[in-house]
Image (cartoon, rainbow, N blue to C red; front, side, top):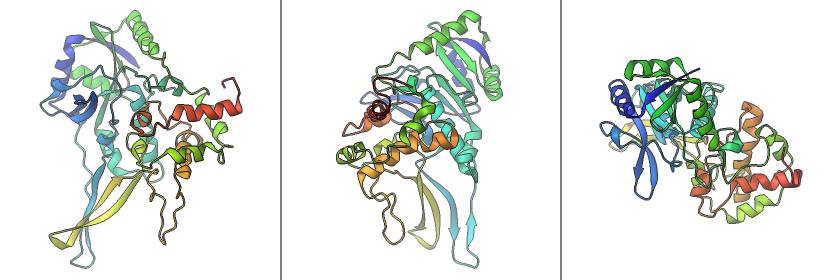
Length: 350
């Protein structure tokens, strides 16, 4: 891994040149002080790189909210099915380190078992360009180990050095994109040190879990019947927004939709789903295996802090705080985890 330095004013030269070979996606300011990741097309100068966490993560570029998996016709025997997996080169700018960790989680999930060809086609075509963040009061990435970009999980990562960008090169693809599109020079040891210090300074956050991430399975393993799940369930309105804003939630539903103008043809569509919705765990025959909000809240926490740590050796909470910002009843993920820390390790940390 190497470090380069790009003069501040050259960033737009880099973006403009890269646009010749890639579709551009980046964070854009919207009304209500919201940041949205959008396809920029010719409006790449609308991109902002110094911003607090966006309302939604950039995962929808790689895993769309709604996508067609295949089309079919049933006017003959056998039915005709057509599935095309395509993806154009796309540069996603301005990804915060926590969201890079979120994408890393999705990489593992969609490679597990039978790899998902739709996700991996987009992922292979994507150039991930991160940028140092501006944490707000709900961020707790420092305690989740996601303050710095994940090794092997990005192509370029930019840190603001006032008059220049320190560019951490994370892949050969990133190195080539830099060399082909903008003038840079090798970073000095002092510039690298300064960049690391600026990233580390963002660890001074108001919130944090009081246990080491690798110890989370031990913490949650014995808390299946804790009364706090009923307390959360009484407050939760099962809107599912905590799932939809999460960088690592990946549940989806699949349905066949017939063409309203042609009863012999249709398409198979994949759409995001959410484990907090009341009918998420309903199966054929009408049985609902998680028919209370308490059960669904417990499941969400276990899907972040227990099951994936056991399976993938990585927490699926990246500390972005989006679920808290979006929750209409103020369910606090950090307070809930620390509730169990205090029960198991009174007055201390592990």
